[in-house]
Length: 499
Ligand code: GLU
Image (cartoon, rainbow, N blue to C red; front, top):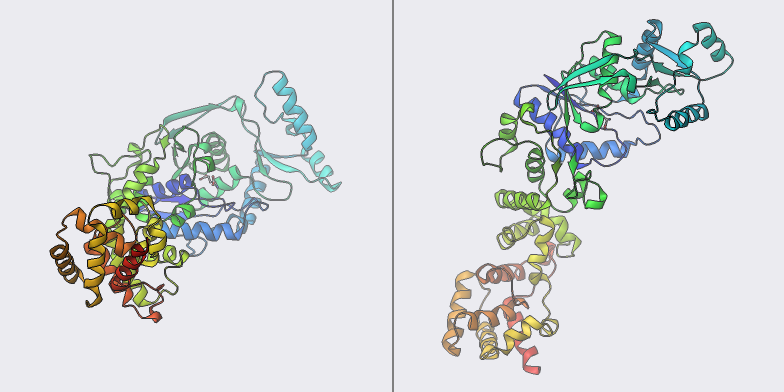
């Protein structure tokens, strides 16, 4: 089995296309097949090398490595269409010689006039066939006179073209609705329908799996396979990925590119797992499955043909799961750029990364995305009693009976304490309870406010040691300065004493 993903490098990798790549990859991996990456860059105006590099990077980030492709090579290269122009030219000549193709000299104005006329008479617009009747001598004379024709495919008239689609079953088109498509433009560049057939045939692709936006191209391609004497591959057209309003997922719905999802702090395995389940189900109730297991279970026959709706809540749920599963060092590395962006980490030293890894248990489980982690532990880096005591929820805590006494006692107790780990914190809290007679919320809410500046947040058993571990970091660790618990309690008690 040989499958391919054939993106046009004209922008970012859209999640819908990433799903197409994934389905190809799953099939290849489950069936010991070959996954080919081909770059369809014949649109010289819109294709860029930056876009190509971005698509490769996104596919690698998703873990969808290819066996043959522009960078890794292979026996069926080159894998960029712009490097295969000689092949298209040679097959175009072959089709011309066999009478399956002809030169067309119609101007854009002429084509547009024909189109309008057909629309006006209620017929579907298609090429009127004007140049079909030109003899070879007439064509040659016009070329010698300096005209630059396109090459058109001579579509057989009024025949039924059928192919079996592995997702949709038998699909049939009558050639009456198909005008003669352009195969080669006047500048020598091949049109999509032509290049794709030559490439899929020469690259010995056995299964063409792509978005259903290409289904109306497929009969043209089947006819080309026939004219060229190639055996057509199997086809599978995947329903498109829709937004919640059932229109194709687009910018209007928010993030659409893989790069954006990465930027927002989704893990690649979450996106992969989620995309696999749009329009396909592995069977049973299990949905959280690693990619190898998805590949083992994947079958095109089980892919549904109704459109799949992109459900951001479900993706968030999966991302929460994979964040919990991720090794702390890896998640810390992923989170580092978001801490840097906030100014919380200035240099990503080993000590900084180790410290970040210890913070994760406070955040994982309560955030949807890696991007949200720094905010969850913001209290470490931003501690400002004057600002805190202006906030309603903090004021409410401070107004509770005994709250100020708890804070004063805490400040006093910590004056002689060292850095707090969990046990030392519990011991200190025990002494404050003894001294003030407060317990439960009446004890811990004021303590939280005094040490974190916030009325809510992660468990104090985790937060307090994290504060003091941070306060102990050397400046060379590259982490923004963190004030320790003793300094915090002292400063907070002073601030409320002045209120
Ligand atoms: N370059 C085409 C696209 O990106 C590929 C279509 C196909 O797979 O045949 O839509």
